[in-house]
Length: 193
Image (cartoon, rainbow, N blue to C red; front, side, top):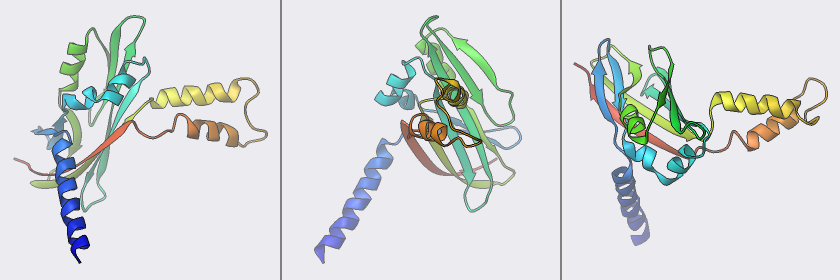
């Protein structure tokens, strides 16, 4: 009988420890009931993310924000690539209600400042909102995945006969569609002014 009780205590302690290590988001409400999050630098400083950022390949930060107990959801995306030749950071945000713009940042300090600017997650008219925010850090961008798919299809006769794309899909599925580098989930309740 002691073991189930110990398992419960251990589970609670583990959940508390995980929550304590989880980076915390800052929140603000912008005009029009837009909920925005300020992202912590610790996400960029995580060893696996930092290594990917320095690789010269695009790192995608995919945010999915759901209003709990409803079907309301929205996606936001940040793409960061270090241009090894020009030694600049190429960044792009795709967020709620804004046109996507690419920027070139000259230093890591400039990247960190840009990262810390609020990311628009969702708009709501509710006075209180319960949100689930999921972040997946992916080692590629959607454009790079499509480029690789086309290259694999066209190169060296690798492909399939007829209309099928089974081999190409299998190659893409085991390489580019790999697991995220890391992922996070935040559950928050906010009171809007």
